[in-house]
Length: 112
Image (tube, rainbow, N blue to C red):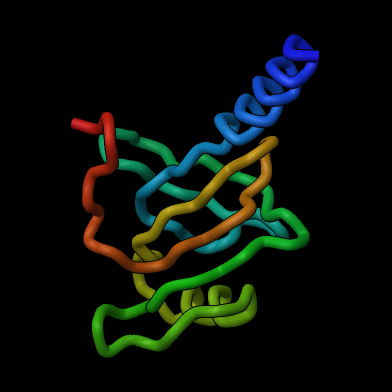
């Protein structure tokens, strides 16, 4: 019984560990349903597919900017931006599950 519980806990935590947060400039969609992000130190943006149930949050345009709470708000903010939006995407299973727009780019645990 303990082995089963330990195995179940391992699978649960391993699934959570597969999500990756990527911070950078999110640029305009190159094709419908995809978003590109350029991270610090990279020469070329990487493209990721948007999940059908992607969650969007944050504020575009700084402190006085517009709240972004839906995919349509996010798309509109991208279209109105000159260079893209600074933010963080959460990638899980090759798809973007969450987009957080804004922030100051604070370093997370383990980043230098």
